[in-house]
Length: 289
Length: 235
Image (cartoon, rainbow over all chains, first blue to last red; front, side, top):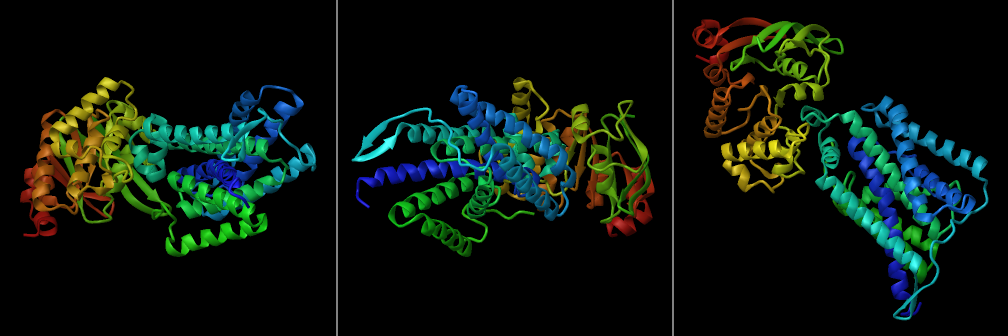
């Protein structure tokens, strides 16, 4: 490794981390309102990416409009899954939702292999070229994607802090019964948050799929990573998911550049385990009842 | 009668917590439900606010049957519930807690008036409006809980154990507020284990034992009733 690689390594780590954070924030949002871990969450990420692939590569439609369309379609899919499958087992033992999530993994990844095919695909680039920073090359694409992901995180934060629906999501996450006493229709908040969380995963899929490549089986790894980030950051905590995502992204980028990708994966989990040993409820964790 | 409960029953699985209770609340009146833990007081309040569905009986409010309405609809009609244990949104600021009380109110002027009312009656909350509600003392949390209920502009307030776990001096403050609410025309159903306090505040009282009303009447009469004195006032 040379010093030239440092800026590139950091920007790669940051962009990767922000996209991990988007997936993880979606997962933690869903956990917050419904108290379930949506193991099929990574499938929303995969489907979001494939939607954009068809939109741009097959139909030749504009890139950013495709990202928005993908987010909207997956929002609706998430809301439907919540209303049909997850609402039915809401409040029951988490093993029920675990079983549903596992089922979704197999249905969507196998179905994806049949429909989309098994070959690796790439979403067409929306920008070419880049700039040299301290001798390292940064593509415009990666810079734009980092800015877009960061804006989304900030936008979501403002939405949750300032808007009526955002406050209702936070309220239901803390105490559903007391939320109902304020007039909040908690069932409505369930599907809204589920849809929103799924849409965030879809956007991450679009952006990640643009930088890397896509396959129908990529959802499961995304779920595992998002789950580990959420545990590391603290279940239900959005700042935790953001910080956790960036930590994981940085480890991925730095260790892959300096040593190798395999070591990076091992290192990520070692770091997560260390955090859990010293802070069992995660970096920003709280006690859940 | 503003609120009338006719013979309601509440079941939790096979256990019957409320076994056919009837009570009435007039406009501007305070009625209290007193009784030991597990007598069914909280279940009755939860049935009124729609958190639990009665298995039998009717709840009439302002002439309409609200027995199987959603909590959201019941709040919209003018019944607010101050739950047992204050139930703060602990990770949210005092002001956000209060704003959530006005969740169904879209008019920002009305919300601002509500906040002004709360801060006028509980000046300490104005000082602490940006603090997390979970960091407040028990008494201050109770003030937030009452203020939050008032933000919805209710005509009826259901209060579940507002004095529980509070220092005597704070209990006096809460009692004064309940009196103020009554004077402003609100009707209140007050659930209390502190029977002495409850009967001093209320116009009428209902004594509950294991899900049924065993005694009811004017507060003054209940305060003088030998059975009540023996069982609840600790003479």
